[in-house]
Amino acid sequence: MPIDEGVNVDLQFLIVEVKKQARASLSYLEKPSAGKLKKIKDREDYVDNLKNTLENKSYFQIHRLDDDDRQMNYFKALITIAANLERSSDYFENICDQAEFLGDPRQIEKFDLRQYYREINRALDMIYPALTQHDLGLAQGICDAEQTIDELYDQSFLQVRDHLNDQRRVDDNLTILFIVRYLERVGDSLLNIGEAILNIHLGEKMGIRQFRNLERALKAQNMDIHSPHLEFKSIMNTRSGSRVGKVVSSDEANDGKKTVFYKEGPKEKIDEEVAGLKRWSKVSSVAVPEVLWHDSRKKHSTILLEYIEGNDLLEILINQRGRVGSALDLLTESLTNLWDQTRRNKPVKSNYIAQLVRRTDDIVSVHGQLFNVEENMEHVLKRAKKLESGLKAPFSTLIHGDFNVDNIIYRPESQHVYFVDVHRSGQGDYVQDISVFLVSNFRVPIFSPDIRSRLDEANTRMFDSARDYARRNNDDTFHARLALGVFRSLITSTRFLFDESFTSDMFSRGTTLLHELLDQESNLKKFELSPDYFLYR
Image (cartoon, rainbow, N blue to C red):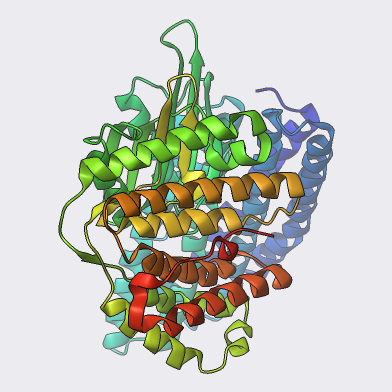
């Protein structure tokens, strides 16, 4: 990818100057002198000026480009590279400042610091060709330098520790520890530079570990991450820390266009999702994406999934009025078939109050005074927990576990409903999914009468369908359990919203509903949930 000639020259000069600072700092460590130190400090201003010039030119180019212009990624990377090169130069100056505190400069000879500088210079030499030749292999080599430097630091740290344990020249050894710590920080800056170059290609900020996981995953699908025809399109980063996106390969000359769904994140959640997808794949009434590739590591896991073309139900409710009726018809029919297909005639308990209590801190962190509105909230929750302990569903079904409206995808051409993000799925009370669905629609912070009417229509259709199913299957505590679920979801959903008026309304609805339920706790089979609690009107 060609870049502006001025930026090209500035970057080359900046790299050269940082290499000079690296050589000068090593020379100073091996044979310190006042002249060498002065030269290092004088050169630092020139490095700062080069960095600022490179940043300014890059920002100027960014403002001239369209958001979808891939060259914008190039200039964003240049800004990161310039900042980290300048930071490395500062570290070399800091090393010399620390060396002045050595009582006996010869102590530095016990540590082979040349190893650090060889690795640093090797990485610095890779930066320009990696960037301008679009060489992802060199970019990964720059990232690898950080790991090598970390290993050298670990060796130096152990060596310093041994000297300190023997009480040998304590002050000098502490100073040396500070010096090698600055060299370790140079490694961190090189990692930032390498990752910035990798991110030009993907158009997405991604660490070297994630990049390599993605590279291996795509290779298993005959997709080449190095190909100029490959594009990573970020969809979202979840609250749990997962990275989600789709990868599109548009190489028509070979396999044609191919799209996969990529997800990487905490091991427990990703592995649970894979298990959930395998469980759902045995169900005929609802479809889920196929697992194409799964790799589980110590802390993180990665999956590639079949990419499902279609619209999530929230998008349909908001923007596609003509499809609302058919989508809701298919969804309610599919759910009814699902419950019949996976039903087990064994009573199952819910866990709504415990779920709410676990999320209390998160709610309070967003709305500090919300729980103060309700007097004796702790006592009320204890009563609710006691009520819940005696309230069982007469049977269990396979449930989604996180049945938000945006986890449902509708494909009208194939008349399929797909469920995604199924990591919380398992056998449970079908009422839990219904309560989550109702509140996920209610909490949408859009108050256009037209859109709200469609959200209310979805809730009414879902409630009516589930209520009819309960009647046919003699589920005489359906309303009471659904009331507890709606209460729980109304309260816990406030942590996702900042509109104080709206969240206060949700909290008020939830607590009012709970009090109404508690007032009838002696005869819960007679309780009927009013739709007014989950319809916005």
